[in-house]
Image (cartoon, rainbow, N blue to C red):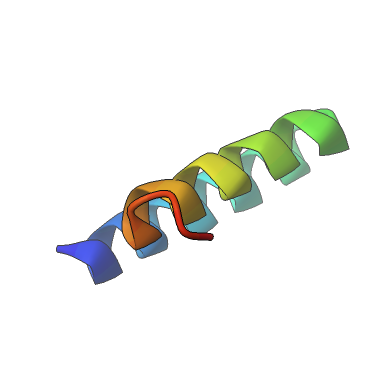
Length: 42
């Protein structure tokens, strides 16, 4: 399940990057996903 969550996050970031999303917003999404996967130890 964690792998699926990670894949979903990467795909989401790719779509957001193509649509011109803010870098800070994408970094926040990536950090939140790492926190979710690591239980906040990331």
